[in-house]
Every structure is written in C-alpha cells, then in structure tokens.
Amino acid sequence: MIQQSIDLKDLNSWKVGGRAEHFCQPGNVDEVRQALEWAKENKVKVTPLGGGTNVLVSDQGISGLVLQTKKLKGVAEVLTTDRLELTVLAGTPKFELMRAFMKHRLSPALFLSGLPGDVGGGVVMNAGVREKREPREFCEIVDWFEVIPFDRPDQVVRYSKDQVQWVYRKSTGWDPGVIVRVGCSWPMQPIPTLPKEIKAANELRKSKQPLEWPSCGSTFKNPSPELSAGQLIDQCGLKGFQVGDAQVSPKHANFLINLGQATATDVSNLIQHIQERVKSEKGVELQTEVRRLGEW
Ligand SMILES: Cc1cc2nc3c(=O)[nH]c(=O)nc-3n(C[C@H](O)[C@H](O)[C@H](O)COP(=O)(O)OP(=O)(O)OC[C@H]3O[C@@H](n4cnc5c(N)ncnc54)[C@H](O)[C@@H]3O)c2cc1C
Picture 1 (cartoon, rainbow, N blue to C red):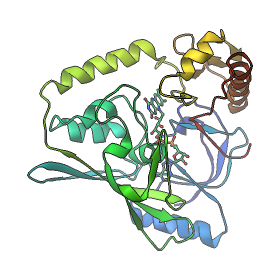
Picture 2 (picture 1 turned 120 degrees about the horizontal axis):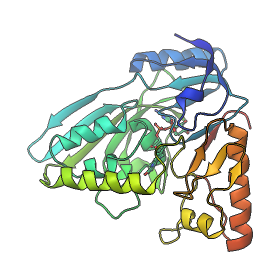
Picture 3 (picture 1 turned 90 degrees about the horizontal axis):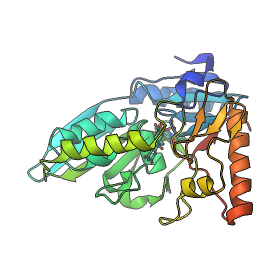
Picture 4 (picture 1 turned 90 degrees about the vertical axis):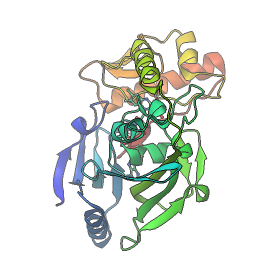
C-alpha cells in the first residue's frame, strides 16, 4: 500500500515540485487508519493531500508520508422532510458534492460549482466565493466532520461545526490529522432557476480567470472584504511579470500561472517579489492563501 519516491508534479494543479518520500492513496477509512499507524510506528511525518489545488509543493519534495485522499470518495444521501443531509468521504471532488445538491436544485450547488479540489480540502480551507451568496463558504454547509489524528490513529474524532473556528480561507481548532468524512446539509428549498444561475456564474469565472493555465487559483488572500489582492498587484503594474516560467496572469493578477517549465522555486520567488512590491508601493502585507508543503 505504501509506495516510495512518487513524483508529485501531476498531483497538484500548479504542476510543480518534487517527490514524496513515501506515498499512499487509501481507498477507505480503515486504510487511512492503517497508513497512519504505519507512519506512527516508523516515526514518519504525514502530509495529507487532497486535489492539490491550493498547495505549493517544494522542489525538494516532501519527506515522510504523503497521504492522498483521491480514492476515498462517495456521497450518501438522506432526505428528511425539510432537509437534505449528505455524508461525504473527504476525497470526493467538490463537483460531486455540487451534483448532489443540484439534483434537488438547492443553493449550495451555486457556490460549489466553480470550486476545484476535494471536499476535505474545502473544509481545511473553508473554501468559498467572494460574491455575496447564501451559502458562499464551506462553514455554512458543514454540520460535522471526522478526523483520524496523526498521534492517535486508532481513533476517529468527530467535530461538530460549532467546535471549530471558521475564518476566511481557514478552519482551526481540530486535532492535526486526516479528515475522512464530512456531514453537510441544507434546507429543502429548491430554486428552479439554479441551472441558469450556475451557467452564468461559470461563464463569468471563465471570462475573468486564466483557467487554461496551471495555477492554484488566487495565490493571496484579500487583505479585507473591500480590498482585493488582485487589484493591488495590478496597480503595482505586475500583470505579466515573470520569474522563470512563473507569471502573474495578464488576465487576473492574483493568479500566478505556470507557462510550462516553472519550478516551485520560480513560483516562490514570484510570490516574494509581489509581496515586496505591494508592501513598498501600497503599504499592504499580502498573505498567501496557498499552503507550502515539503522542505523549504
Ligand atoms: C483554478 C482554481 C480556482 C480556485 N478558485 C477558488 C475559489 O473560488 N475559492 C476558494 O476558496 N478556493 C479556490 N481555489 C483553491 C482551492 O481549490 C481550494 O482551496 C480547495 O478547497 C482546496 O482543496 P484541495 O482538495 O485541492 O486541497 P489541497 O490543495 O490538496 O490541500 C489544501 C490543504 O488542505 C490539507 N488537506 C487536504 N485534504 C485534507 C484532508 N482530507 N485532511 C486533512 N488535511 C487535508 C493539505 O495538507 C493542505 O494543507 C481555486 C483553485 C484553482 C486551481
């Protein structure tokens, strides 16, 4: 089950980075537990990986075990009189969760429709959209989630939504470990015009974002709801600026794209350059939304 020296380039949406020292893709919760027990016995650090759409993997790779949740997928549905309740395995792609809500024309389908990656990654990042929609972030649809802690692989710990701190693009207050299962729900209030709204939202995304290039979406967090990181970068004249093959997208300044041969170091140097320019010209310290994995 545990493989050695696996190239991670094709497992992240920036298409950069080195190798995982050890690697596994458990197909069920019991296999996650076994992998974490193996890591604990062998005193090996564990790095969970979902869809790889919000991570910058180092060119030096990741030492220890990379546990990718891709094969841990499935959605189970319970329909009560007034609510749709879904139990979702963490590696389920967000578009499958979107489809489950869409089947009943429920509004969470709208914000989920353009979000890449998996459901587990969505919980970790409290993924969502900027537009004022209800709901617009994961914290509004999640009732609970279950984690196998790194230090107690024999346990599955359930966190209710209220035990967790949900902030902009982050959830905290849960034990470090692998999220394996997520419970979501929404009132049964169908919106007949939902397919049309989703189509319009997806067309808007395509027109504004360079989806044809490898990227991790927005690299930086918006400093505040009113202040967009993309606008600040654009105002510093950085659209099109390049380090190696890593470029500030001419279409959307918060998207750093890989023109083909970029390395993680190119992306990292580009991030640093942008942070320095925005700090000196605008006085704002941009924080990355993207998470660095591996040795830096
Ligand atoms: C084109 C594009 C557009 C995007 N648009 C948006 C957007 O509109 N809104 C938005 O919020 N994000 C957006 N993103 C970013 C990204 O898709 C989200 O943050 C997404 O939720 C990350 O999910 P993932 O499965 O890819 O997580 P990964 O990138 O694989 O991981 C992210 C973090 O979560 C951890 N992690 C992943 N799975 C688990 C697990 N099961 N247990 C414990 N830890 C785990 C990883 O260790 C890492 O620290 C976009 C990305 C791209 C490429």
